[in-house]
Image (cartoon, rainbow, N blue to C red; front, side):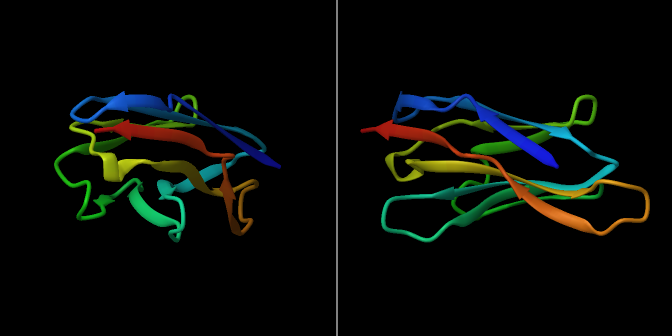
Length: 120
């Protein structure tokens, strides 16, 4: 099994910054992709940003303001959020695509989510 634990959420004023962290632990052989999603009240969960060994990608709404980074030892992904806007308010979820053993299939795992609230 794999566990993802997020931290770093909170309340911030518009224009401020927050940094989220997500640590993956458990039976991990390889992580192909790590990503951040968010879900605002009454809306569907959306992809914010993702990172693989080859690339990163960002939703248009966060380009130039958010930066994803990854530390492979330990298996941690970060989301630096700058110039925050009220519309960034959401629960942010970490996701990791993990192979637990050599040659095994990859499985998606999710964290429990961390609340980010941006006041105007």
